[in-house]
Amino acid sequence: MKMKCFKIRTVNSAQKYGLCCRDLKELRRKACAKLQLPLKKSRVCLAEDGTELSEEYLLSLPDHTDLVLLTPGQTWEGNVKHLLNQLYTRQPEIIEAVREIQTDGQAAEMRTICQNIIQNLDSHFKAEKRKDDKSWFKGIDERFKNKSSYMRDCCRRRIRSYLNEVRCFEVDSAVEDEYEELVRTMHNALTNVDFNGSYFDRSDAEDARLCTDEGWFTCQGAFDKNDCRSNHSINPYSNRESRIVFSTWNLDHVIEKKRAILPGLTRALKDRKGRQINWEYFFDLLFTTENLKLVHISCHKKTAHKLECNEKKIYH
Image (cartoon, rainbow, N blue to C red; front, side, top):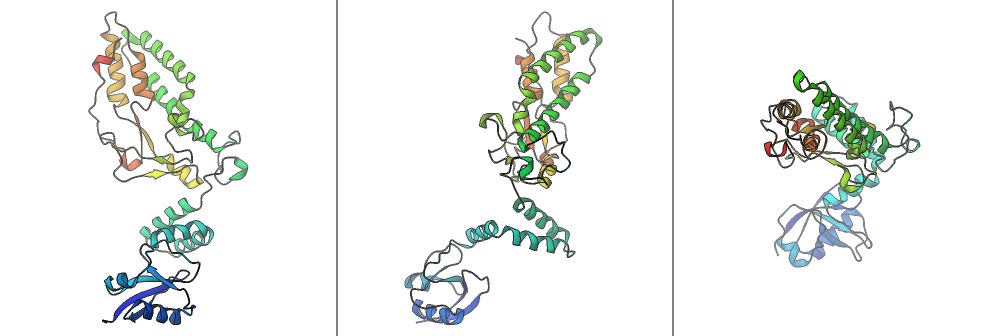
């Protein structure tokens, strides 16, 4: 039978050894001798996905396939699952190793990769109270006792800033009083829904928030796309770095606020001719996810959207 060559390792070591054999029995014998493991009840599986080898399967494999030697009681779920398990169970060691790499003057690309690893591993995303994750609250006012209340306030502040832009928008003096009345109506409506702070609050109802119950947010893609092609995601609840980075994400108006919505509202006031303005329609466009998309900064297109209000919805 033709001699075949393989690379083999143990479950607990990444070091590989080259072995040649004619059948599975010979492979097991040589591997156990090389790796100094007992031959009795030993098994061999693919490193790629953990498939245990039979005699026939072994002969069908190409030369230099990566294999893993298993002793009684050991299992192997494949390289990816094994890596994820190592990342989960050995977080402190991995984080420390990554930080050492960062301080060794590595290339910018490597430093970025390392930073991403730290941001995702050095995480206390399940912690909610200030006393359980003090580093997350560094620089945050003492009145916030848990993460959800702070994130809720972050969203409220964004929505309040949109309201201020609406309030400060210059309108024709002929409709100024009516415009101010509409702004007051919208302010009252926002107060009733807590300025939609629920969007960032993972403790709120599932249909009221933009994140999972663990706090993961996913980019919804540019205004003219149905989703994010780059699969951007972030958990600002996980650590201080992610919380800060999340502040650069945008609640982007699909139909633009200053270029379309507010000019459309002022035109509607001028042309109403006794008709009643559908203020709820404009309210939804300005302050709700009917027209707002959460987007990563690189998916936030600054070009004109060239979208207009729906003329059929402007009046009741």
